[in-house]
Amino acid sequence: MKGKHVNLLPTQILALGFAVMILVGTLLLSLPIASANGQSMGFLNALFEATSAVCVTGLAVVNTAYDLSIFGQIIIILLIQMGGLGFMTMAAMVFLLMGKKITLKERLIMQEALNHFSLEGVVSLTKTVISTTFIIEGIGALLLALRFIPMLGWAKGIYFSIFHSISAFCNAGFDLFGNSLMDFTGDIIINFTIMGLIILGGLGFTVITDIRRKRFNFRRWSFHTKLVIIGTSILIVSGFVFYFVVEFNNMLKPYKFPTKILTALFQSVTTRTAGFYTIPQEGLTPASKLFTSILMFIGASPASTGGGIKTTTVVVILLMLKSVAKGKNDVEAFERRISMETVYRAVSIFLISIAGLVLVTTIISIVEDINFIDLLYEAASALGTVGLATFDNAELKTISKIFIIISMYMGRVGPLTLTVAFARLQLRKKSAVRYPEGKVMVG
Image 1 (cartoon, rainbow, N blue to C red):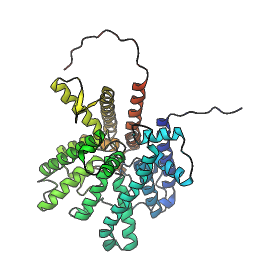
Image 2: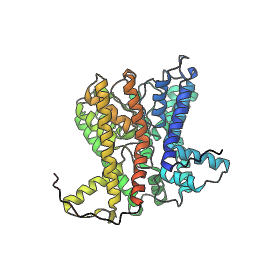
Image 3: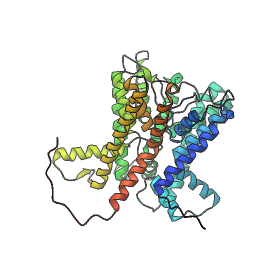
Image 4: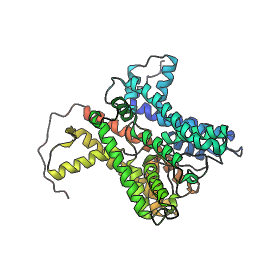
């Protein structure tokens, strides 16, 4: 008797693909050879590390620099690369190298993985994503090598340069120094290279491709690109101003004025989705921790290596509020109208993500004896796949680790799944029956 053919939806295949990568990574990281001391770190810790790497988060329960062997570190960076590019992009790369024809269903999965608007050109876009990634990461590694090779020698310097370039572009935040980039707080080359990689990785491949093809002609950019660039710029600038002012006499106090500027700018960039840091996060003021949690919750842009609810989701909601304030029926920007389906989708994703953040924070606050603001910070970092933390994650109880693992997975896969699910529901045939309007008071 023949077995039944299981017909999975593209979103289910994507979610399953990430889960398989995490499982394989867990098994490899749980091997004794992956640990520096030759002893297995245990299944739960390996699962935590693998999930964090595949979901390009950066939260860790072991120190990548000291507790993992070279084998373990290589597994981590491979998981980061695969997680950053995405399951289907990696599969497409294998298909292309093997000369295998990419089927219609595979193209549909690739379309949804890349948040592309249509099937047209999706394979070409995938090729561009792969080539763009390796080019940008290569340039980043060369720039980092200018500092790391003189400091660490050729072999170690090249290894560190490649590792941190991939980790930065994929917005992962894993490092090999043991204290992130705190040894390079005032280093212009390291800071601007890492920031450049983080920003490019967080913009989204469709935006990078659009800018590359149309140069820096703002008028010729697509509507999506314009919203992403403006939203990202506002978040980076506002974050920089906030940290510079609020932390001026706190975490920035020991540094000279130019270093204060550089450090505040790096903090603003990295809190979006990256997870690297040049100042201790536990020393931030409560106001900065709350503001950082908001930035982490927002995250990067669609079709990028970062997580969060995405910049465009927030921009669309703000544009909706602007339209309501002006008494307009349509949500508009740059002489373009945003469909109400897109607006409903953005509001739904925002509200569901807020509910997830509240739920996770509440659960771990019941279990852990840690300040609430730090637990909110942790939950936002996990759901936004950022990786910043104000305490050692190894101290978390088992139940908390499990919920953080789930949060990281949902933060990477959840928003994509929700977006596609809402889009599919809205494309279904609308009901021919409309009920009478009911009156309700709000506000």
